[in-house]
Image (cartoon, rainbow, N blue to C red):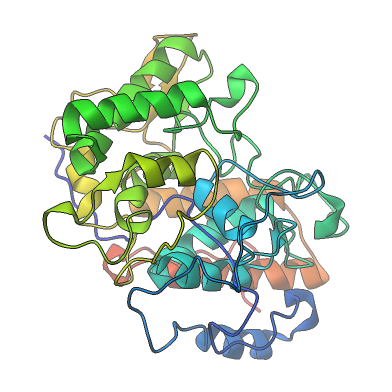
Length: 381
């Protein structure tokens, strides 16, 4: 039997990330990382803290009206990020700095700061531009600036196999051609599961059943299905996220952490706040209390462990070599030593300096309880 022990607050990026163009935090005006010295950036990041007031607050307000994205605006597979961009908490073109992403996660959804940092820096290191300090929440765009030298793609959060992954609750697998637009069939399935297991509400019980059902659907239909490394985290985190971040912060009592289908459709399908929406009443995320509820305690259930299809559909094999919910440090070591090192094998100058900064921010966002050994793939400055 595998013991479930999840001290790390990890949330989907899908995470799960967003930006505020304003004064939500004490941070110098979101300058590019490329224009700051190491000392200046370290000092600025140390001041990245939530505002004094961290309770429920109207976020669908006159300063953040909904506006549908234009043809050149970037949008990705994460309904939370898309909502923040459509309401102007993120730059409406869908290109932002990590500090903007972290601050809007807190401003727009009252997301826990450590979870926001962790999700943001995983996404930025995989899909962003470390020289210009810009990340697209959607696809590749010239607005992130010239690509750094090397095999890096700087192709945005909807790039399959980086931050985005298979078995989304409301988006299709990349194998089928569209991994980021709302999928009506999958959303209707979410509604049906909410009726069957949650009395018409999406809650943690529904999240558990739908999470495993979507994993099995992908195993049975997608020959390239993977649930490896950080995707094992984000798959379960994204199932939890709506119960804490998409429920109006004024809701309490028996209906707390219960998402009604009308606001669910607003977020998942329309990427906008329900009219008059209040953010969560306290900072939260997919955490060490909620993820185990969705994960359950049956290690024989397919998807409980990380893995992938190895020879076409219905050939899922458990594989924890890239880490999993049960092996945070293995994930960290693989992510830094293999994934990032593979994207940037021999960086020099500003690129090397900025990668080291971002890797430091990533390590700092890990829970102290993980006891992982910090890695320095590009040496110490």
